[in-house]
Image 1: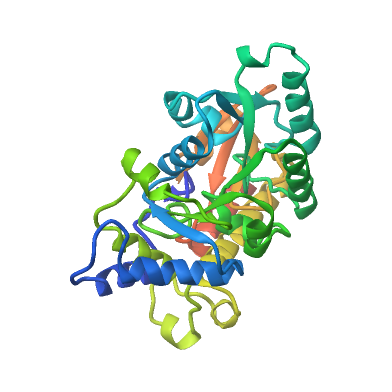
Image 2 (image 1 turned 90 degrees about the vertical axis):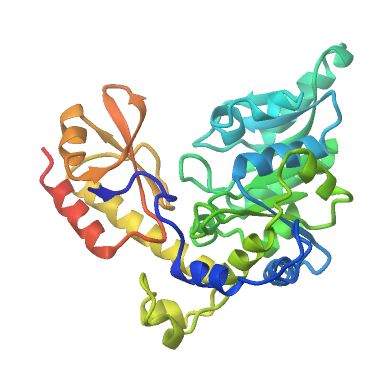
Length: 361
């Protein structure tokens, strides 16, 4: 079977595994080590945020729950799209910490500044604010759960409304690598416009791990990490991985590597993180184009590594004979099936999928 089910089905990029092996030795515990310090410096430079505070945690749900609990007082709530990860796929982790998730109807996976303003105005106009959770933080994902992306203008609009109502803005970047090559929002943009964001590793070539960036600092955040079980004793494993992901590969050093970059990719002035995610995006666009060529529509116009095809049951069954893909739900009389590329996706496997798609009836 050829796997297009998700973007975390393989171990890790070979360069990441090499970095972990090279990190063998004696290190300080709980992220207070030279490898985490070096990785944090690398991310600060990438974000053009010299004063940023950078932390590393193992997984996305753990990071989201810790960040949100850290930012909110007991009676405060977080605003999210109804399709947001914290509202749909985190088993009530945010509510478990005592904070309500206020959901807004998603617009292709996104929420708008106008929706946030209306939500806060409704709360303030209620006359019974003390009887209701107070919206205090806005949560968005880049890319969204549907593979769509926020534009820089949309992010600036959200920043402005957050400033107007004294809300904090949090960007969940579990798949941020795919968003960097598909949208006009850069790491420096995020550092300038949001209060906190994550740089996902688990779904972008790492064995595990998420980096958390607070552009203006976060006093005692390590206390919150420990309280949420997120202060990894062998934290240097995270630092080593992010240093590898944010290194700039050379064609010569990469040539012998499994899943090696092309000459053009390896010669580009970009990090490994950006290059492998951009490649996955390009492969995903080939898949979308193959579906369009036989008249099959996509549920969303996704520029990233997740593609959602509208298939009949027969078409889905035919593809699932040879390919792993994920049923996502029903849409009118069709089944929504997700095809996901990753750092490890081979061109030949995409060729085989496109050939199979071309035979669908």
